[in-house]
Picture 1 (cartoon, helix red, strand yellow):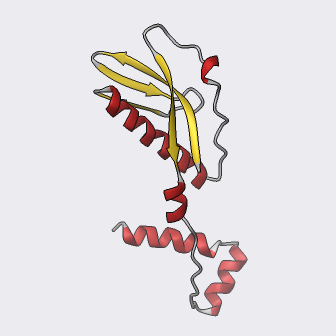
Picture 2 (cartoon, rainbow, N blue to C red; picture 1 turned 45 degrees about the horizontal axis):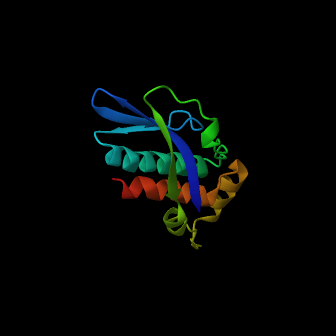
Length: 127
């Protein structure tokens, strides 16, 4: 899955910073233009993955020609490819055995078994 968003690049105090007008809070910086572009891709990817994982929609990208650009700044398109993320995020089916009373209590509380197992595994592997 490829995405392209317009970004506005600024140069201040011998460094660059970049913002994505369509994505509030999605910004990055760098000491060179190349580093800033790489960091912009990382920021855009992290922003997109965060929205995907929270089941939120990515806003539609603006037309780059319709952006208002301050003097001394420039706009450029920044692209990302989330194919690798989706390959890693592919769900696998697991079968497990738990006591019946625990199963019944969890169902009664409306607990999502898959999400609970994922959360517990993330805690365990991050220790």
